[in-house]
Length: 305
Ligand code: GLN
Image (cartoon, rainbow, N blue to C red; front, top):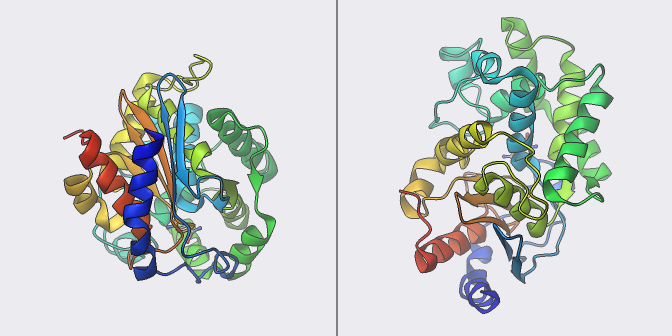
């Protein structure tokens, strides 16, 4: 397995030169555009890694998977999906279009920014610090890594420049989609996006989901099977934004990308996969990461469809 992963990284590293590191959050612009890494965790907890697998990156939108799990655990699926939809979208991840046209009270899904901001507002906690600490502790638990923390400079950089997200959030406050204090909800959202991890950490989240909510390395159930199933379905249909359909056709694995260049993938009953490649395509997905997953899926016949 290690040899296969090494070969796949070698075969696909050239793709990184065709993408660009995200710069709209200034703190992300220093990432190494040539980095490419992968880690696979199977359901026995065995780990196989290659390339730049121990390079740290901010999880960005991958955190939307974690807060969706937590919001469903806190509020139940009926309450969560009364406030956010579960349909794919053909618009960009930070789009306002459908929000204003059709879905002003209920953003279309929890994987686009508007839906994720509503989702984070449903994570329980008496204050924004408490809500964020619950997200951080939950992330540490499902990665088996107690050292996970945020990258302070990426957090401050997005907090300072995140005006598109601020616009989405204030618009949703005006329609009643967001209850509570908008700046506090945004602060938790910016902090969760700045959580720093490696391919190994996100592969473990994928393995937990693949294992129906049970941590492979300890046997502990952290999420009921029914909730793991909901989240994998939403990853499969919405996780790669407006490239989710194409990703399903070519790769066929529930996955969630982030503009930090990470992709969290979960092959039900088989394995979790974490990949990193900070150079992005025009949609905001890791260009090399997608190619690596495509080759792995083809070689190991991993498509769920
Ligand atoms: N923090 C980023 C933002 O809100 C997350 C987006 C992403 O990873 N696609 O813009």
